[in-house]
Image 1: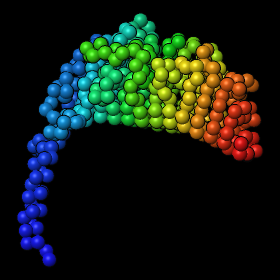
Image 2: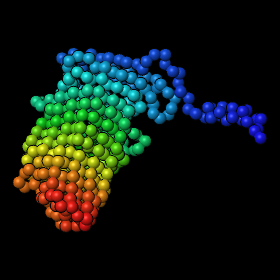
Image 3: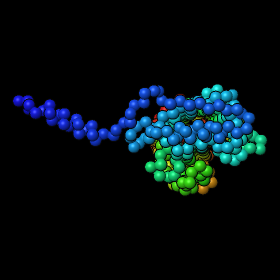
Image 4: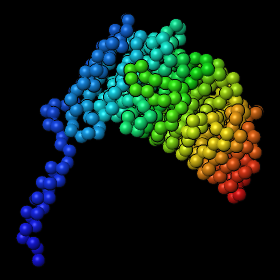
Length: 397
């Protein structure tokens, strides 16, 4: 028999649940706020941009949830060109829901050793149509764009950023794009070019191996300290260097990162690699997808492994239909004795260069998984267990 007090009980439970839930602030009667700022391109437009960003940063949160903060705002930058002689402050915008609309605007960066755009400590932010040029004469910036957790603490999150068609090109003392432990970030159609010698197009750094510290924060991220660095995706991204001994892509301490339909070119690598995988400071490089085409015979290797005597790569996915390095696909830096690759999934096409091969020393690799190659020079190493398809011949070992 149905309890006649059941409706009253249900109402009481509903009221208790409603009282326990976080409260939302009053719904605004208008659309999310939008602002614009105009660049002159004459002197330094960074102060005007920073003033507009500061106004967005100071807005009252639109919700009462403790996490994320939920400050909404869209800043549209107007004008054909912005000249940046000081750093644009995109820091401390976590949970802001900020959209920085830069479509059709060229940012000329002349910050003389400082970053151009510093987004340390920011998350849930969208950069739309970034077109940034680094000065190659006397005021060369150190970094084009920084995404970074401000300390190694997980409570200082800086994640879930979105970059739509960013182009960062020109001269940068260190790198065009730098990501330090900023997680779950998506880059779509990114183009990162660096014309500086002995520099990088992009760095994904999970241990602060490069010692970066934001000038806009008092907090410090200790050098060489590993912190969680997961789930970043770069979809249809280009990493290119044109300076001597420069490396398109450096990765250290990354877990579950995906580089999809990408391209890594070095016009003057002087025998260097397309990608450096660093295991320094005890950092892992696990569950990576490197679906990158490596281009130019100046490359001495596709992937250089560095930073530990006996590193292990767990579940590495590698795909290149036409790797063009004039050397091994896998090479070891000094001090790396033996490399273990577990649950490998390799798809390698024809290698056009005369010195191309699979391994710098096949005896220095212990690999399990699956290997497919159209080129007989990329054979399974001596210690291999799994499935091999090489030059049309398939076998289980």
